[in-house]
Picture: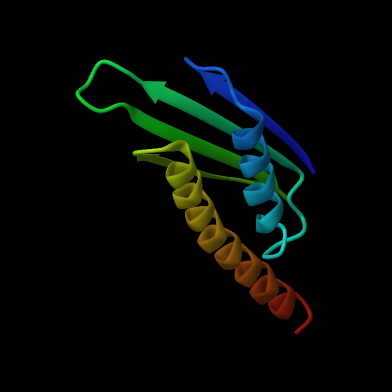
Length: 105
């Protein structure tokens, strides 16, 4: 799977890059047909507390799934996105199985 990471308004550390790669690779245990992943990390300054946001867009067969989350750190935002995508992947996989059952009847 091809995973692209975009960092907006900050420079990406190797630790954060490895964390993102690890979380994206764990999504493949729910559905191994993920062909592409794009992770966009952003920092919004200017408030009393910095806001860290993450958006993950993955491509599967004939579909694009995405999740966006904001939190107190990039790791928490990425975890939130990964949880949302896990649920979407499980629904997508169940839908594919139902379609296959209907096709073979």
